[in-house]
Length: 229
Image 1 (tube, one colour):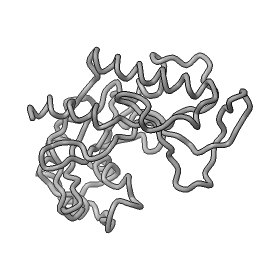
Image 2 (tube, helix red, strand yellow):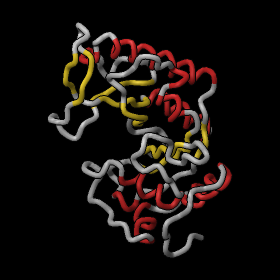
Image 3 (spheres, helix red, strand yellow):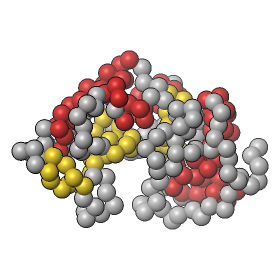
Image 4 (cartoon, helix red, strand yellow):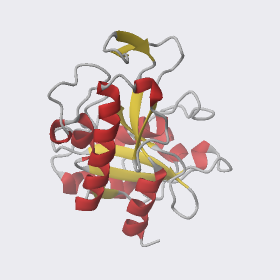
Protein backbone atom coordinates (compact mmCIF):
# COMPACT_ATOMS: atom_id res chain seq x y z
CA UNK A 1 0.00 0.00 0.00
CA UNK A 2 1.02 3.57 -0.60
CA UNK A 3 1.45 6.13 2.15
CA UNK A 4 -1.63 8.21 2.84
CA UNK A 5 0.20 11.41 1.94
CA UNK A 6 2.68 11.69 -0.91
CA UNK A 7 5.16 14.53 -0.49
CA UNK A 8 7.90 15.23 -3.01
CA UNK A 9 8.88 11.75 -4.21
CA UNK A 10 12.59 11.53 -5.03
CA UNK A 11 13.48 10.47 -8.57
CA UNK A 12 13.85 6.69 -8.97
CA UNK A 13 17.42 5.42 -8.82
CA UNK A 14 16.95 2.85 -11.58
CA UNK A 15 14.39 1.29 -13.93
CA UNK A 16 13.46 -1.45 -11.45
CA UNK A 17 12.49 1.14 -8.82
CA UNK A 18 10.50 3.14 -11.39
CA UNK A 19 8.65 0.06 -12.62
CA UNK A 20 7.89 -1.01 -9.04
CA UNK A 21 6.38 2.42 -8.31
CA UNK A 22 4.30 2.29 -11.49
CA UNK A 23 3.16 -1.27 -10.79
CA UNK A 24 1.98 -0.20 -7.33
CA UNK A 25 -0.42 2.30 -8.96
CA UNK A 26 -2.21 -0.30 -11.11
CA UNK A 27 -5.86 -0.72 -10.17
CA UNK A 28 -6.22 2.60 -8.37
CA UNK A 29 -8.65 5.17 -9.72
CA UNK A 30 -7.45 8.65 -10.66
CA UNK A 31 -9.76 10.02 -7.97
CA UNK A 32 -8.17 7.87 -5.26
CA UNK A 33 -4.68 8.94 -6.29
CA UNK A 34 -5.61 12.61 -6.52
CA UNK A 35 -7.29 12.57 -3.09
CA UNK A 36 -4.15 11.21 -1.41
CA UNK A 37 -2.08 14.20 -2.51
CA UNK A 38 -4.81 16.81 -2.37
CA UNK A 39 -4.84 17.42 -6.11
CA UNK A 40 -8.18 18.74 -7.44
CA UNK A 41 -9.75 16.60 -10.17
CA UNK A 42 -10.79 18.70 -13.19
CA UNK A 43 -14.30 18.27 -14.56
CA UNK A 44 -12.82 17.00 -17.81
CA UNK A 45 -9.51 16.96 -19.66
CA UNK A 46 -10.40 19.44 -22.41
CA UNK A 47 -8.60 22.29 -20.67
CA UNK A 48 -6.35 20.06 -18.56
CA UNK A 49 -4.87 17.69 -21.12
CA UNK A 50 -1.71 17.09 -19.09
CA UNK A 51 -3.48 16.44 -15.78
CA UNK A 52 -3.27 12.62 -15.78
CA UNK A 53 0.43 12.74 -16.62
CA UNK A 54 1.06 15.34 -13.92
CA UNK A 55 -0.76 13.23 -11.32
CA UNK A 56 1.30 10.13 -12.12
CA UNK A 57 4.54 12.16 -12.27
CA UNK A 58 3.95 13.14 -8.62
CA UNK A 59 3.79 9.49 -7.56
CA UNK A 60 6.63 8.30 -9.77
CA UNK A 61 9.14 11.05 -8.96
CA UNK A 62 9.50 12.59 -12.42
CA UNK A 63 11.95 15.48 -12.50
CA UNK A 64 11.89 17.07 -15.96
CA UNK A 65 8.65 19.05 -15.73
CA UNK A 66 8.31 20.97 -18.99
CA UNK A 67 12.04 20.84 -19.75
CA UNK A 68 13.01 19.20 -23.05
CA UNK A 69 14.79 16.27 -21.40
CA UNK A 70 13.24 12.93 -20.46
CA UNK A 71 10.83 12.87 -17.50
CA UNK A 72 13.25 10.67 -15.55
CA UNK A 73 16.43 12.26 -16.85
CA UNK A 74 18.72 10.55 -14.33
CA UNK A 75 17.88 7.10 -15.72
CA UNK A 76 16.95 8.14 -19.28
CA UNK A 77 13.25 7.20 -19.25
CA UNK A 78 10.27 9.13 -20.65
CA UNK A 79 6.77 8.78 -19.13
CA UNK A 80 3.82 8.41 -21.51
CA UNK A 81 0.31 7.96 -20.16
CA UNK A 82 -2.02 6.54 -22.80
CA UNK A 83 -5.83 6.48 -22.64
CA UNK A 84 -7.22 3.08 -23.65
CA UNK A 85 -10.63 1.52 -24.21
CA UNK A 86 -12.02 -1.57 -22.45
CA UNK A 87 -10.07 -3.80 -24.86
CA UNK A 88 -6.78 -2.04 -24.11
CA UNK A 89 -6.63 -0.19 -27.44
CA UNK A 90 -5.33 3.41 -27.48
CA UNK A 91 -8.04 6.04 -27.89
CA UNK A 92 -5.85 8.86 -29.22
CA UNK A 93 -2.47 9.74 -30.64
CA UNK A 94 0.49 10.25 -28.28
CA UNK A 95 2.40 13.54 -28.13
CA UNK A 96 6.17 13.02 -28.39
CA UNK A 97 7.76 16.47 -28.52
CA UNK A 98 7.63 19.83 -30.26
CA UNK A 99 8.76 19.74 -33.91
CA UNK A 100 11.72 22.07 -34.64
CA UNK A 101 10.77 24.31 -37.59
CA UNK A 102 14.08 26.21 -37.87
CA UNK A 103 17.75 25.59 -37.09
CA UNK A 104 17.78 22.02 -38.39
CA UNK A 105 21.15 21.94 -40.14
CA UNK A 106 23.16 18.98 -38.87
CA UNK A 107 20.17 17.30 -37.25
CA UNK A 108 19.89 13.60 -38.10
CA UNK A 109 17.63 10.84 -36.84
CA UNK A 110 20.40 9.60 -34.53
CA UNK A 111 20.68 12.94 -32.70
CA UNK A 112 17.02 13.96 -33.05
CA UNK A 113 14.81 14.91 -30.13
CA UNK A 114 12.18 12.36 -31.20
CA UNK A 115 14.64 9.47 -31.03
CA UNK A 116 15.94 10.72 -27.67
CA UNK A 117 12.43 10.91 -26.21
CA UNK A 118 11.40 7.47 -27.51
CA UNK A 119 14.63 5.60 -26.67
CA UNK A 120 13.13 4.31 -23.40
CA UNK A 121 9.49 4.86 -22.45
CA UNK A 122 7.39 3.92 -19.43
CA UNK A 123 3.91 3.46 -20.89
CA UNK A 124 1.09 3.73 -18.35
CA UNK A 125 -2.34 2.86 -19.79
CA UNK A 126 -5.29 4.61 -18.16
CA UNK A 127 -8.98 3.99 -18.80
CA UNK A 128 -10.00 6.73 -21.20
CA UNK A 129 -13.57 6.12 -22.32
CA UNK A 130 -15.70 9.20 -21.87
CA UNK A 131 -18.53 7.16 -20.39
CA UNK A 132 -16.32 6.67 -17.29
CA UNK A 133 -16.11 9.71 -15.01
CA UNK A 134 -12.55 11.02 -14.82
CA UNK A 135 -12.16 10.27 -11.10
CA UNK A 136 -13.40 6.69 -11.65
CA UNK A 137 -10.91 5.81 -14.39
CA UNK A 138 -8.39 3.18 -13.36
CA UNK A 139 -4.65 3.02 -13.95
CA UNK A 140 -3.44 -0.07 -15.81
CA UNK A 141 -0.28 -2.17 -15.77
CA UNK A 142 2.81 -0.23 -16.81
CA UNK A 143 5.24 -1.27 -19.55
CA UNK A 144 8.91 -0.31 -20.00
CA UNK A 145 9.64 -0.22 -23.72
CA UNK A 146 12.35 0.56 -26.24
CA UNK A 147 11.71 0.45 -30.00
CA UNK A 148 12.80 -2.76 -31.70
CA UNK A 149 14.59 -2.65 -35.06
CA UNK A 150 11.35 -2.59 -37.08
CA UNK A 151 9.79 0.13 -34.94
CA UNK A 152 12.94 2.24 -35.11
CA UNK A 153 13.03 1.91 -38.90
CA UNK A 154 9.37 2.98 -39.16
CA UNK A 155 9.97 5.98 -36.91
CA UNK A 156 13.14 7.00 -38.74
CA UNK A 157 11.50 6.80 -42.18
CA UNK A 158 8.62 9.01 -41.09
CA UNK A 159 10.86 11.46 -39.21
CA UNK A 160 13.13 11.88 -42.24
CA UNK A 161 10.18 12.44 -44.60
CA UNK A 162 8.58 15.00 -42.29
CA UNK A 163 11.83 16.82 -41.52
CA UNK A 164 12.64 17.01 -45.25
CA UNK A 165 9.31 18.80 -45.78
CA UNK A 166 10.09 21.24 -42.93
CA UNK A 167 13.59 22.02 -44.22
CA UNK A 168 12.31 22.46 -47.81
CA UNK A 169 9.78 25.07 -46.68
CA UNK A 170 6.74 22.80 -47.00
CA UNK A 171 5.60 22.86 -43.37
CA UNK A 172 2.16 24.15 -44.36
CA UNK A 173 1.70 21.19 -46.71
CA UNK A 174 2.16 18.65 -43.91
CA UNK A 175 -1.09 17.01 -42.83
CA UNK A 176 -1.88 14.39 -40.18
CA UNK A 177 -1.97 11.82 -43.00
CA UNK A 178 1.76 12.16 -43.67
CA UNK A 179 3.80 9.43 -41.98
CA UNK A 180 2.94 5.78 -41.40
CA UNK A 181 3.40 5.79 -37.61
CA UNK A 182 4.61 9.32 -36.78
CA UNK A 183 2.72 12.48 -37.69
CA UNK A 184 3.10 16.22 -37.29
CA UNK A 185 0.15 18.34 -36.16
CA UNK A 186 -0.31 21.93 -35.02
CA UNK A 187 0.24 22.27 -31.28
CA UNK A 188 -0.93 25.60 -29.89
CA UNK A 189 -3.37 26.78 -27.28
CA UNK A 190 -4.77 29.29 -29.79
CA UNK A 191 -4.25 30.52 -33.33
CA UNK A 192 -2.34 33.60 -32.14
CA UNK A 193 0.59 31.54 -30.78
CA UNK A 194 2.76 31.67 -33.89
CA UNK A 195 6.38 30.61 -34.32
CA UNK A 196 8.99 31.08 -37.03
CA UNK A 197 9.43 28.54 -39.83
CA UNK A 198 10.98 28.36 -43.30
CA UNK A 199 8.86 29.38 -46.29
CA UNK A 200 8.88 27.86 -49.78
CA UNK A 201 11.53 30.26 -51.02
CA UNK A 202 13.70 29.90 -47.91
CA UNK A 203 12.29 33.06 -46.34
CA UNK A 204 11.21 33.24 -42.66
CA UNK A 205 7.43 32.80 -42.22
CA UNK A 206 5.18 32.70 -39.16
CA UNK A 207 3.10 29.58 -38.55
CA UNK A 208 1.49 27.57 -35.77
CA UNK A 209 3.88 25.52 -33.63
CA UNK A 210 3.88 21.84 -34.57
CA UNK A 211 4.29 18.68 -32.53
CA UNK A 212 5.31 15.11 -33.31
CA UNK A 213 2.66 12.52 -32.41
CA UNK A 214 2.67 8.72 -32.51
CA UNK A 215 -0.30 7.37 -34.44
CA UNK A 216 -2.58 4.76 -32.90
CA UNK A 217 -1.42 2.37 -35.63
CA UNK A 218 1.95 2.38 -33.84
CA UNK A 219 0.89 2.28 -30.18
CA UNK A 220 -1.93 -0.26 -30.60
CA UNK A 221 0.32 -3.18 -31.70
CA UNK A 222 2.90 -2.15 -29.09
CA UNK A 223 0.34 -2.46 -26.28
CA UNK A 224 -1.22 -5.57 -27.82
CA UNK A 225 2.11 -7.42 -27.80
CA UNK A 226 2.71 -6.48 -24.17
CA UNK A 227 -0.75 -7.43 -22.93
CA UNK A 228 -1.14 -10.36 -25.36
CA UNK A 229 -4.41 -8.93 -26.64
